[in-house]
Length: 430
Image (cartoon, rainbow, N blue to C red):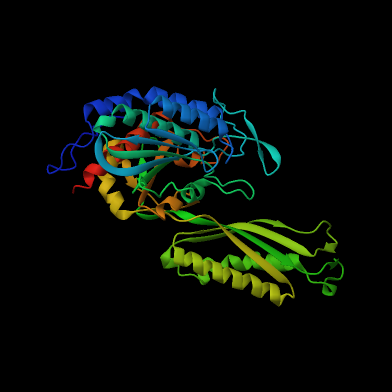
């Protein structure tokens, strides 16, 4: 891939951004270290809120760069480094998530994970199956470059290494929400804008964006249907929660298409787990259902919650049963601020090449980066890491045990993060 200069001007009326050739040389020189970091973190993954060694490695690397401060233990295991530039300017944040998944790696890589961890009380294999190893490596690379070029930097950069994006275990708090609750976005040095990257199996080096809602809000759904146990040969002597749960599962699929305004955004209702009973000839007292809800509009989300509760309780009552519905927020909508996206588009095009910056579809997957965007404008972008010679449908998706990346895409991610930090202050002059 041809390397473009971050020092190019946005227009003839603007000064040259960043530091031109020296900055681009520093970015190129960071590539081997970024790849080495990625391979280290890939080989040593840790689960959500358990990223202890990951945090130690990150903190040590940041201290070696002589940042102005390195804070550890943020939201359990998070790390926040702060770099004050040589010129006055705003405070902005660059974010990477750190945690891995309970997945048994099957990539066959020489640095494949053999790590084990505890998940839901069981010992499980652990793998960076969603690319967070790459996210951490790219952000460390950006920190390295910006620290070397700090005299050219206008303002302050916070490097946010976030734990538990995949969700904290059990009843623990964690992730972006806990970092915010602990004060990351408040105080005199609070950032006014934030950017995050997520690797995706698009062609390596592509940047994909979408103005407005990009990734869905996610809610965890739990339903307990309570009937009255009886012998399976005489169902009329009890109240059958299995039959009731089946009706509820079917009825919920009608909500998106028949009870919600489809013009306001996609809605997904999935029941992924149903449990009840121990024998085929015993109708049990209770059945539990669990699932996930995905929406792209907060008002639609509220409407879905109300209609879902009404549907479940009405069906249960019609069958002589009762039902308890619990909906727990997992992540809000991830929203790309349209003004910020427009403002930074020249930066993205310099980072990847104009032809490789593309608008993408809404993604029904969720990201807790949206919590940051509830407070400050943000950009969340997908960085392609897939092999262009492999058909898109054959590339392993995120969370697959075969998920891997084309490592030459990492430098595009570093260039994007560095460009955002360098260009943000200059573009405010427009």
